[in-house]
Image (cartoon, rainbow, N blue to C red; front, side, top):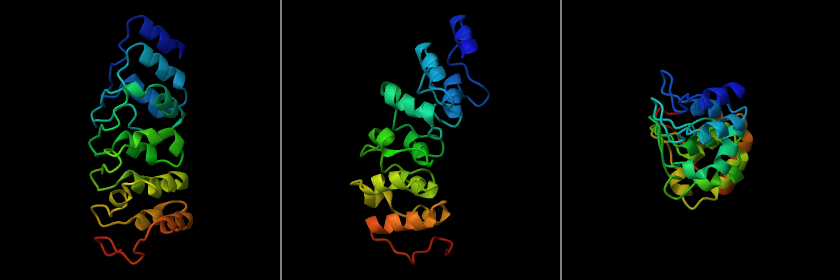
Length: 192
């Protein structure tokens, strides 16, 4: 942290980027060990909406402690609608981990973003189910947009297909079937 502070105070550009287009803030939040570094970068002018070569902002990363703090303390810098080249918003990324909890990311689930699909037709709910994040899945299943969020992806895979891929397949399938009617015989476009 001291070296970052020294570099920034001596004129280093907080928005300089590497060959992937990542800024120090991208890397700081992705590594997620210490929010203090991200806070210092922001205070020295780092742009939280700057996209890398894959159109990812610093928050297009797996949910971790640094991102959790950032979301709570710097909402004014966040564009919840920004999509990367895979069509994923920061909320897709937040749901694509077993560590995120509804209380910390629920504010980002607006009616306009909660039905956003990635390039494969996956909603936030598909990602949360795939990762076995039961608390987040229960929260998302109570959404008014559940019919759009729970639709099959572009390959015809249902939530149950994703549940079987999670590390908590039985618990996840039970959670889904308690909250909604779902065809357990449905096959995807490949007959699975």
